[in-house]
Structure formats: C-alpha cells, structure tokens
Image 1 (cartoon, helix red, strand yellow):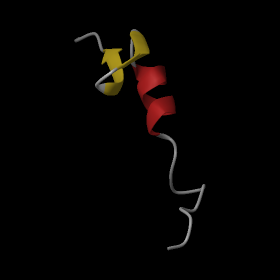
Image 2: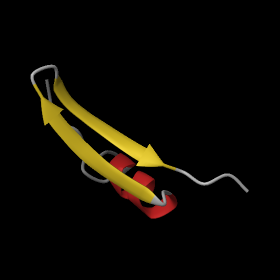
Image 3: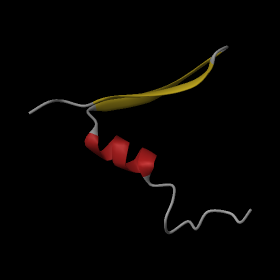
Image 4: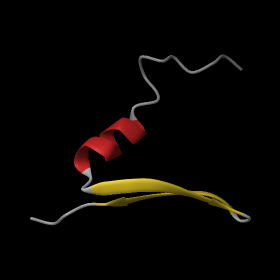
Length: 41
C-alpha cells in the first residue's frame, strides 16, 4: 500500500491542539491515550 499523501493526512493533532484549552498524552500498560479539554461556549 502507498504511504498517505502528507497534504491530505496528519493534521488532526494540530487541529485539536489549536482548538483545545488543554491537551496531553498519557502512556501506560494499556497503550497511549490522547486527551483534550474543549471549553463550551
């Protein structure tokens, strides 16, 4: 399979970071978990 076109993929985390009040990553035995806090209003 061909690699994804960088012009069409890979923007999700940047968008979440720009729109969230806080965000982060937790790594543990169950895997990696990304979280974000978005303020309503």
